[in-house]
Length: 69
Image (cartoon, rainbow, N blue to C red; front, side):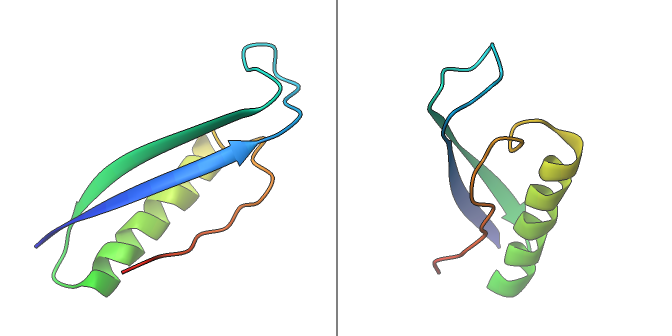
């Protein structure tokens, strides 16, 4: 089965010149998995990899992953 995840994030008081002081973003992604739990594990791994390898979450105040099924 294919699962769709939609994620949003928000930042305040950005110090990066290429971003406005307050900004937000969102993105969607898909995961192919045998169950909801396995899809959530794939989304979790993706978000943690993005946080480690990208600056997109560098100024996000709350790093909270929650799910709604």
